Length: 387
Length: 128
Image (cartoon, each protein chain N blue to C red):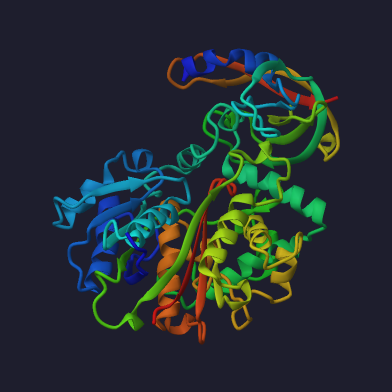
């Protein structure tokens, strides 16, 4: 089988919110129908669902066949892919490899998460299942705790100030003001971040991505399935997954986001694209410190300089490399298993000039970085305008 | 859950980790494959009970079952053999919990199992 090109031909998404009125299936169907409506393909070859904890959050597994049935697509191969908070990006990567290889010609990738039906402490417990039951959950540590440990280490080792750490959340909120699907559409100042409630010292509430419900869907096609002008599509130039040592505290160097570093390097090399060509990055900043270390792992900032560069304006709207153009995890929101698909839908909107008030003028190439755990799994994809 | 804890009680009570029979690197939690040299010749090894804090946090909203211990002091400790362990710091003045502080292991009640009410014991550390 010779390699075809692969494209994102259409997308759909729900706003990210406390969707009390909608079930996990309601959300998945809304996003999937949005993506199918924009395409001539009404029966994708496969349906791949990215989701982290539906078993806990909605007492529901077997999402693939359930979504297929709801869409009237019974008979279609359908299944769920799980890789913690990188479930969405990983599900997309599975679809991308299948479509690009020619094994199938089209795939509907749906990322969905229902978090809000749980009590806050049960959400923490569900998320913590992405960490070791025996050695991380056993000591009571949440993901906020692990990232608090990481943030202190980062600030002490790299001499990073409170205001510098606050800079990525500030960029996120500024970008979300005009983003219709974003959860928090309000600008904030570094002072707001620095005065917000302490969660896991030194991390405060506004260092942490919020909890929310949402679903995003994208239709992947190759040249056999693509019809009409490619100019309304975004080309998937390459996509890679990599892993790091499972738990943060096992790592020789806690500040080296190895999975992001490896996935980005391989994807860019395979795409044949120099990082300087990139127009924008959708970053997995589940916590402010994670955004900073991700920028460093991809080589955009020198070691220790991710937050410092963000404070200096290097990643703000209008710069050469804007990040999180619809608000990122902090302000667009982070319905965990759906997040990676939201990022890809946002890259598609930018590269097809559909981003409205959030449009990055002349955007040519975009990267999405979706992470599970504390950089334990990373799914990185590179997109360009389709020709 | 109870069986899960019973199975690894020696690891919780005595800090039984791993030692690579080929290169000598030591690890906690235990490993199946040496992170240093890739060897699969791994033996159980009791860890040293002292080390230093690499980083710490004070957690205000811990996992369910730990509410009574809030705020939770958590730290990544580098043991004397180089192994790195995630642990609670207990019975120590809050302002003594600092990067670089010397700590030693102890045994404490870790949690009460939700279903059976069984008390689970495990390692914690205190400022030495």
